[in-house]
Amino acid sequence: MELIIENSYQNHEVFQFAKKELKDFWKKMQEKSDALQLPGSYRLRLELAAGGESCHETEQSAMAPDGYVIDTGEQGGVIAGNNPCSVLIGVYAWLQSAGCHFLRPGRKYEIIEPLSGLAALSMTEKKTASLRHRGVCIEGADSLENILDFIDWLPKMGYNSFFLQFKLPYTFMARWYHHENNPLLPEEAFDTDRAEAYTETVRREMKRRGLKLHQVGHGWTGDVIGFPAVEWKPASRKPTGEETGMMAQLNGTRELFHGIPMNTNLCYSDETVMKALPICLSGMRFRIRISIIYTYGWPMNTITSASVIPVRRSFLPTSTSEY
Image 1 (cartoon, rainbow, N blue to C red):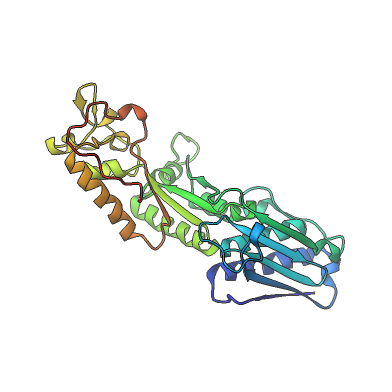
Image 2 (image 1 turned 60 degrees about the horizontal axis):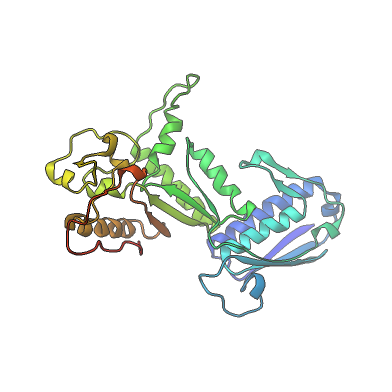
């Protein structure tokens, strides 16, 4: 039985990926199921439409949560979503209903059950996500393969976003490739250039799936005071007097918190900081605005590094809430 996929978005990257996934899993299902060895065709139509509770409306707000509608029978049907990622999530929901299970990240953890008959392809479901952003933040020690497997798994579980910490998630990758605290594996060469190349691969795979990319968080403070930070390591040099003046005062002293730029907060009542931080934030957004959708501005990584002195100027810090 041939799977025929129809849609009006043949040139859209996410629809192309959804079609590829359907074709690939259909082939695996055919190998397991006699019912799919019969002659004929099964027609699936992929559509963009307002999803979930308002699936029949003609317009849907860009701020609306993901929603999809599935209506399939023994001869075919439709999978519609209110955005491309929702369509992909709907595709995976239909595949799971048809006996495809995604137990863990990685293709080796997929299980395909034999179909009891064509009736097993029937599904009627309308679903709206309870939250607009549903994702996971990178942590720990991660190889490129770890990250890509996880990104591939996210929409299968109904997630729509992934958070790459820092401007470059070097430290999480370096922990893996340097095999920190692992006496069984030798350290591999790994630098920021390789991390940047891997990060671009991650962004590209997220884009194929229509996933929302969240990035940065920690690291802005180090950039402002002249210590670009991609890991929680002590500074390799002493800060100048001007740089020290921009740091938060703690117990009467302005200095790198425990010597680590990443954990050092700024004095947000300092005029130089107030002017430099928004420029730093906007510069980052301009440099990679095409790939980063949501940029975070976390002040520091430890609350004890915050300044506890009165405001040093007569005006309030500028807002960075829009970045």
